[in-house]
Length: 146
Image (cartoon, rainbow, N blue to C red; front, top):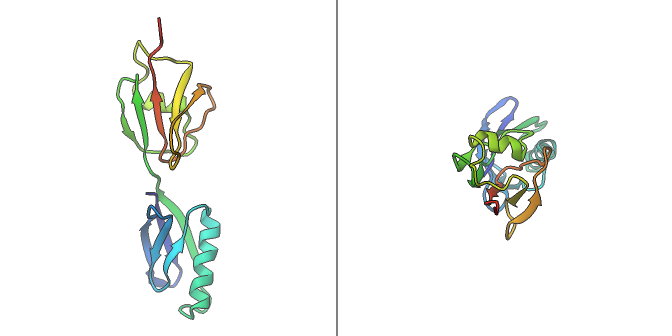
């Protein structure tokens, strides 16, 4: 679901925005399907460069890769505005609460249910100030018991 901006210097036809498929690949011109899952932008850039060079398409390819857009995060439960929100680097669960206009009066502010993208289920974790959110995460705040 993430989108990448890729440029091959000197080759306008080998540039653009590419969406990562659910299989973790991108479809790149000339070389086809390229694995992107688990790679940082530098490693993906090298992978594309090698495929272009080895295929004989470009003699000395120089490829630049950057993230154009991350998958959104989902904030649910006892917040004032639950919904889908854009991911930003360094986003914490507390920051996510702020994006969702704060807790409701019934919210349990000590625990949160966190489902990481690709995980089978959610996990209950203690709410700390430095708990980081990842792209595609679902954050659910339960009710507190009186």
